[in-house]
Amino acid sequence: QVQLVESGGGVVQAGGSLRLSCAASTGTFSTNVIGWFRQAPGQQRELVATISSRGTTNYYVRSNYRFTISRDNAANTVTLQMYNLKPEDTAVYYCNVLLSSGAWSQSWGQGTQVTVSS
Image (cartoon, rainbow, N blue to C red; front, side, top):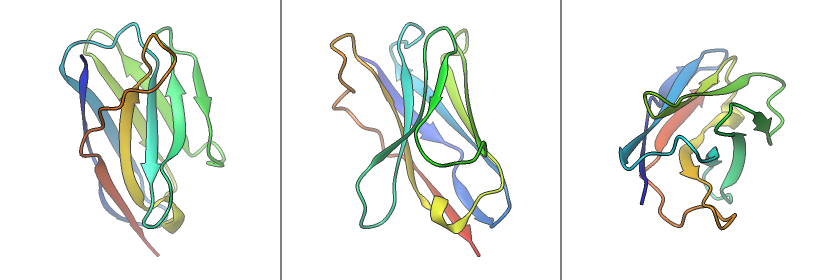
């Protein structure tokens, strides 16, 4: 089973940028849809963006084109580039793999904290 590890979070001022990375610690996900999720304090986890194995992308939060998801199948990594960050983007960001059953994996990593100060 694929195990994913997130990295790249940090503390930035509003208007700054961050590049999050999702890598497989075990297994490979080159044929799977990968999604980035985020969970803000006191809120439910929400889907941010997905990317298919062929690179088709979808965005699920009102990011106004501030987020870009991409993948490198050869390197087994998926990246979430975030620009013009806002305080409301503060959350723990997670990546996950969509299984062949159509459900997201129940195995979640530690996530990476993104904090945007105003």
